Image (cartoon, rainbow, N blue to C red):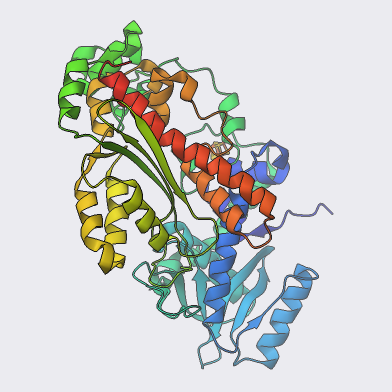
Length: 490
Ligand code: SF4
């Protein structure tokens, strides 16, 4: 007899995203790309799950060891012998579909209330489909499910006492929405099985490849597509290419520029067609003329935790563990200051003090996409009343280089983006990030987590510290290089 591949709630989610994704997961897992951030996501999700369980008294954890069959047996046994105890990771099987339920709490009437724990700050449609699958399987296994919630992070929570996480979660009641989906699960499961028994589905890449998850087979599916134009209309920012795609035009060079709705798109089209960068030196000089010296070029790196670690912090709050500040005087002399905290303690007080020591009390403070830096400084001002006045004044002096770049510079190699990492190679190719161990903000956060982990040895921590310093300093030096070029000074 041919064994049917087992299904689970994540496999059904994959099938509902794209049947080909499920087919490839089962038959050609070797074609999947490695997700380097999966481990960090898993660790964060695990921490959220553990805290959610800790808030339910008397619960019993059903271990995955030694195997799922044992977990199924243990679940059955506990339901029969301890019907008044909450269950964590209860395992059920129905019609060949296996699920683990994060939390099941007895409802006092012989049934259970189900909670699916998520580290997001709201319930999402695919969470409800997950819950529906669990309801269908649990009921199929003979368990009465009388309530179902998505237990998500409440981002209004503030940690008041170390280890006190009551209030961290909010429940979204999804039973009514999940019921009709649960009733349809049998049909979906049968369709998934038919898909798996057949040949690879012939599905072209499209919007489904990133919704609700970035598909791990994107490179594989993309590699078999015919090569598109070198300069696709999708370069046009803010979805500006959609109107042209709807007319069957994929190549930006085939677009009639008279039909482009704004100056930005016309500049992009012209620079792409001619290979000549757009550069309005006069406008750049005017835009930056009011930026008084000494100018402080400032960049923060921040970390946010689903489960707050430090008193007074909220879930996912941007907490600064690093900054780089290049202070430039009117003669073009530049001094570098930095702050980096890798001891795992709340870095905010030390960061605020270092900031006040590094940033002159007069002159412009320049950031790239400045609302972020301004917000971090304002948060610090709010937390430390004794430092609030100078920090609030500092926030008022923050100006933004990004809109200046957007209005005065475009090189076709930016491919529709004005992020500093898109602009810099077109202005100062020697300052690219490819030779740095830490090359973007997400990598900086990963590096912070690694450096502050208890089992990281001092030598590795020192290596991470120097990689982070190099990265953050590159960000602020890059701003100076960009501004000088925009103003025609280099
Ligand atoms: S990349 Fe897109 S088309 Fe290919 S399997 Fe994934 S979701 Fe389906």
